Amino acid sequence: MQNINARWMRAMFLAGSVMVGGMCAMTAVNTAYAGPVSEKIIVAHRGASAYLPEHTLESKALAYNMGVAYLEQDLAMTRDNELVVVHDHYLDRVTDVAEKFPDRARADGRYYVIDFDLAEIKTLNFTEGFNVVDGKRVQSYPNRFPMFTSTFKIHTFAEEIEFIQGLNRTMGKDIGLYVETKAPWFHKQEGKDISKATLEVLKKYGYTSRESNVLFQTFDYPDLKYVKDTLMPELGIDLKTVILITGNDSKETYELKDGKWEPYDFNYLLNPENFAEIAKYADGMGPAYNMLFDLKKTTKGHIVVNDLVTNAHKHGMVVHPYTVRADALPDYANNVDELYQAILIDADADGVFTDFPDLGVAFLKKHEQK
Image 1 (spheres, rainbow, N blue to C red):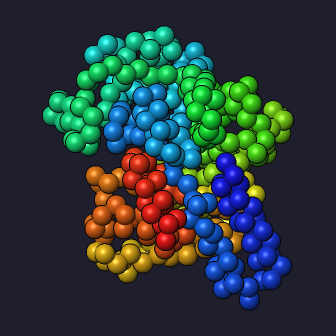
Image 2: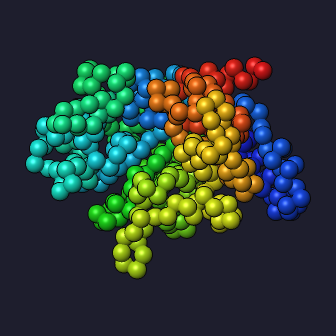
Image 3: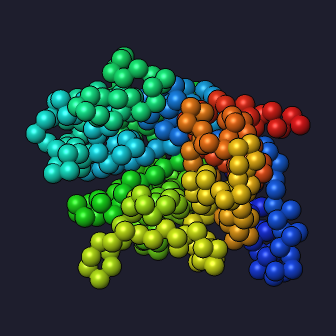
């Protein structure tokens, strides 16, 4: 908690320096921002998801023990208004829902969380992620935990908070929450306000101020503005927020325009001319890590960074890219440490999401000793 707050305070101080000093201060600000490696963080992406099925409490416990700063929670809402921890707002990629409830798929073939009560979801077996190819389940990452072995269950957001707070008490630590609301636009279409429900749970468990060890993130920028302008003031809370960024081809977010839901244009969030406005709503940015590099100039073993992180820092925003996977490296990286080096040291990102938290923590420890 101390490290991440120090990083944020430095970002805000330097952002103020830029506003006072103007463009002539740019070089000094860029150099001054690079803080000690000890202030950078590793976020356990869906827990220690390279070693145990994602978002299970077992995966979170393992990641906790690996020494991460934050554990991530992706949230979707059930039919009876419960928040469950699951990466997708549908269930068929990580459970046996198609076998237990074969008639509950929508027209697109997916089994949506919002169409099930919590009690029904609790009956499902949670497993390593898979895709269905020619009618057969094919594990997404073949060398990870075997599918449908051992027994894992989906749990609620409240249950995970109690689990982490319990570990913090017994282990004498203060590991934080990194909370993501999945597809707020979709939940709105279904008549549910997942962001309000999420903030209400956080408030119930004592996360109410910018000093609270929690980050609230979303890909839905229109909803983030609603969270900051309306929900947080109404609830009397003020939490740090992060805007996630992806490519437009993902159609990750939709926004309501003139009564019609249209794909959100993420190019707005990548244009540095908009960063001053974005910083009013987001304390940090969470881009895909590819967005930190000049891919036209990058070659195998020679990763060239761009100015995304620098521009974010100039406006007081930290940057936490996603997601490093040692078993799914980009073509331009020879090994996972080279990728961590490019993201955390060369580009000076403030942290990174990874499926391999132990390798990220080990990387930072090695660099702290230099």
